[in-house]
Image 1: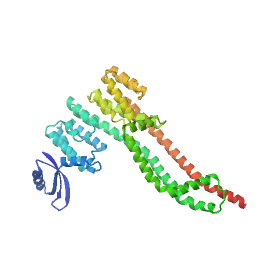
Image 2: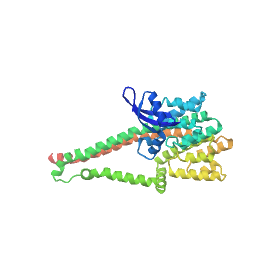
Image 3: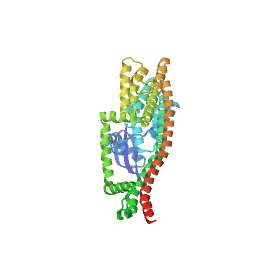
Image 4: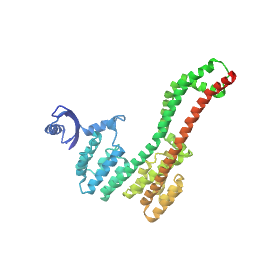
Length: 406
């Protein structure tokens, strides 16, 4: 059977659209007719998926989001744990999904499994929705006969990833909003308020204090050339992103990030936490170490650390222990390398890696809280200094004029 997308009219003449399973286009139309739907368009979903994959900007080209994927994985794990077959579990889940894109992908996955394909093979046809860690863990779960357990671990992993992302976003909302509002206020002052207030000083043709001259020069520059800031900024951003996508550019920029005083430590802790959790989850699900290192490398998000993991993989392949290879790179904390060594000796590397991840996640939470607590007063201080400079530059000539009059 194939999956078809349709558009049509129901018995009341209301426009409807959705997904239907059938042997062919004609069978799909007959099935819809029995359901009381007059189909005006019936298209095989697989064809639509391929066309969408060629369009990077199209809505259909996107896969299932991480939050939705975590919910789906949790529900499938629960249904499998209750004894339902995989096809039945996917069919039951499909009835509860409202998003058309998710319904289409799940329908194709269910049909593939129903045709006798392995679950991980069907997921490989939807790389946008199911990342490599997901597909490899599912493959390991199928091979070991522990698919419900593996899906449960995957659900835990995805839920923790979503929670961490939400925590980080929530912590950055206030500083970003305050920066935008503060920049807008300063722009309004420099372009609209300052020229009107200081015009009286210019008309008197008196020698002005240095702060006032600086303020007038900045205000005049912003009035005359301020409109160029946006296009110049966009061009610089485009050039920086293009350079950052090249192999050399990624290494240079990511190396600068790691060497930054506060940002570097924060970036490294976040990356090590992700790496440890991903590697530990993969190993505990039965994925071989070399494959797990390849998959975990992608979650680091830093070219310097990714290259370090490549060296670790190569050295482990040649017979070196994991903790020695990690220590030799100089990119991973000594405490992590020691705990990995203990895990190798005790045969519980996966458990130790997950504990390492928990420890570093606690550090990340503390770092986010510290960064947020520092950003707010620093931004308030910066705004206060900027506004104070504007007020001082305006008041100084007024004080001089009042002294001359007195």
